[in-house]
Length: 308
Image (cartoon, rainbow, N blue to C red; front, side):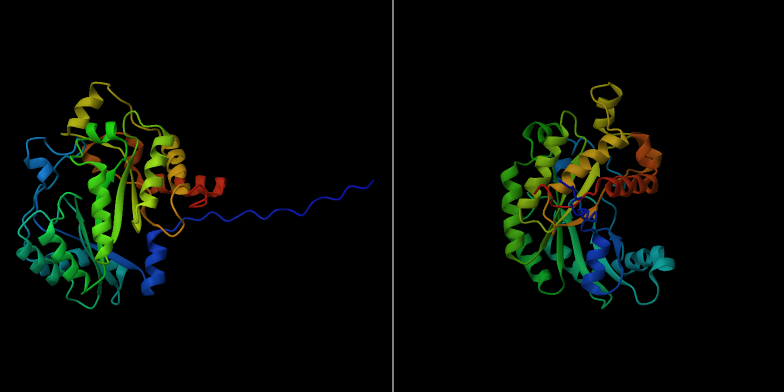
């Protein structure tokens, strides 16, 4: 009996739905984020708990300043790459950008999205800072330009949430996503990988939950330890260890495989200010880290959604 070899199976190409590709597909060009300040503080820092355990309060509650001047300065920072016909996202990132006078905030946000080169408004906040007045404001803004709202979930596991002093229950996050989707906002969720005591399976479970939440995007962050934080005190007391780069990439792979293909990955890792970084020191070289992630994903044929 003669033997014949079976046809070679074609390997699926590695795939993840990265933000740059998604934006180019939507707007036909590269889109840049303009980091802006609303001057808002954070209720989690003001209620006596000291804020999230990893927060260093860098630039805490910066003065708003003239929004036009902020935008011009932000555009100048990317001018060499952006070119004369660039498009932008007005991005209010630091702290809780719906924790303030709603009327003043709406005026600020509206001025930020006036230009034709601004294609979207992105607002970072907390799920427990979306009261009726805030939601009404966000709905009005969503009628003017595409609206993204970023929520810092970080983890679905109660013990981890208590340790980082997140300050709200998982049900609050669920309701926030539901309300935001109802007004047409795109929700982007932050997850931290490497929280003390969490396994790779725990992290993948959080990613899968985010994938099923109705959110449109996700940002993956490495837990990094910054000077001046309560997390730093625990680290220096040897209460936990940070992840190696290899462990982070392996956990990240599990998370990418656990979310649906259509979910946009806004970030594969995050890094703290190098001058304040205590650990892990390898995270300070972001280009090296991203190159290592891409190489590992290519070698392993990582396909987003393969385990969703």
